[in-house]
Length: 134
Image (tube, rainbow, N blue to C red; front, side, top):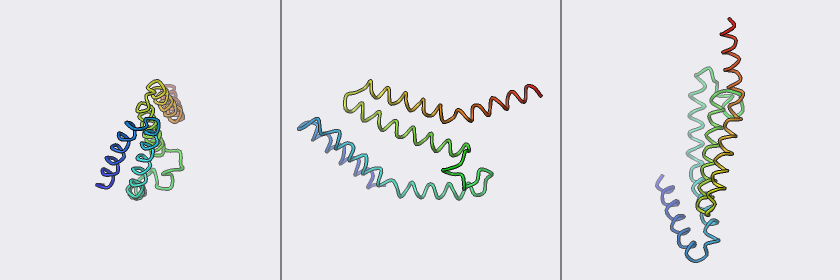
């Protein structure tokens, strides 16, 4: 975990230095820092997924559907991935001085999550109509 913090601090300092010398290259330093942090977190992410799969083996959700099935947990994992990716992209846009592009990226992420949850919302609506009709 300390490696993650050190990598992030080094990338931030390097981006600040490069921004003062050649501002147009600072975005590439930031992207390199993001890549380094993501690579450092992969081992922890793999352990987390293995732990969740083990827990789900004891539940009706089942571990077989963790990343490929059509259930609530899969939808949650996909929405979390969209949120993280959208936030990183929007932050990069803001750091580059494109706040309007960052707002559009965030709007796109929200729309993707809405589209992802649409089948579940339809199922809930059908259930509600079935309960009302009796």
